[in-house]
Length: 283
Length: 295
Image 1 (cartoon, rainbow over the protein chains, first blue to last red):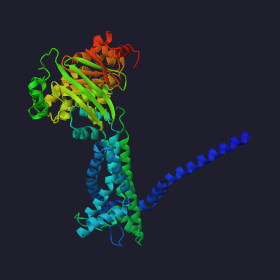
Image 2 (image 1 turned 180 degrees about the horizontal axis):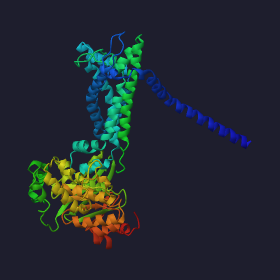
Image 3 (image 1 turned 180 degrees about the vertical axis):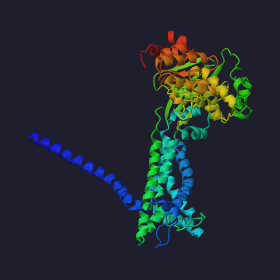
Image 4 (image 1 turned 60 degrees about the horizontal axis):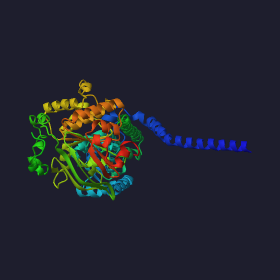
């Protein structure tokens, strides 16, 4: 009886192990599928023209997404200019200044904001900027992405600053260095790699956002010459091409998706390289 | 420049703009290097006068009405079992204990006659005059050896390169580290050994020319050889500086200090010349502690 019991226990163990393995594979399978599909369907349309030419009218073959690629970079630039200082400084406040009674609510607020569906951000900025300005614009698109970055950057900044040992703060203060200088020159400098990582991850996170841009940047089939005008962005272009009835545009949408994914992957790889030796073993 | 404040200048740290020492922190290449050399010899002047010092963290009273005088240019050791308030006492001497959010103090601490807790005295100014070395060596990991030494000057507004270089060398020499690092001043500070890092921290504290140096178990994380070097250094430094050292190591207190204070459960049990404390203490508790019968 004990022998069969033992065998059944071993079988159960093997079954559970197999089940967890299958689930773990299911987690990474989509990534493999996504890459396989994008490469298979998109690589054909990725060529020099794709990166350098404007979209062509329907029926005329060729053309590219140069304006959307540039537009994405412009939008991310505006977003970073807004999101980075506010997010980093808010993170500094949380980690270095806020009393424990304040940090709880602020952290909770940031976590709630991180969970707000992106389309809601889009509607908010639509009401705050697009309606008063009476036009969709690159500004509005940058602002909405920047606002989405703020809580992300704030939380990662706070976390990496909390990793800086108190010994450094004390050493600096004991030298008679003022607190703001201690924070700026000692604490932030020690955690700089971590902060840059947080910013890059936030950029990667919002780079693929589509919904909020529909209400703000709108999209544009031409170059944007004025940031107060609508601007193209890769996710928007992919969206509008993918729902079109034309095979040629479908191919371009696949190519756009492939480029977008590679861009985000590149950011993530950069982060990996940066964080490789982030933790100092000393105090 | 007279660093020992005459009594009539008692209120001087609260009026920092007129205070000569503070001005010496400003970019004034001529005034800076001379400050250390100009100290006049003083027989037995008290550098720090502590009166009825009590410290509370929240509702917990950590120090109970401690009074003692720290003699200038001497080593005063604070001994006592863990949790007796040694570190808190030390930190009160340069207002570092205020970093604990719920800290509260009563009583009085005077630095060469000036009340360092007087209303308008900035903790930052107090800490420039009363430096500190910590138990765990903590050189800034993003900076080179040279930058670690000069950081206190640079972040207090000293720009003149010649001054910085001069002060860096002097401080490293005083910390007995110059010969070991002079060929690699721009190497990362964390490439040094543990004992060297601690001496670097001492050099860093000396570079801002404090009058008093507080040391919180500066050798407790070091091996015996590195410890011996630090102890030699302390004996050397007391010619120019007033040193208050917290130590767990009774032999160390006996070897290097001139005066010893024994704290127990937040109270000052006995304070006297080190020889007296270790040979014929007045209190039974002190004798039990220094002979290793408890603690």
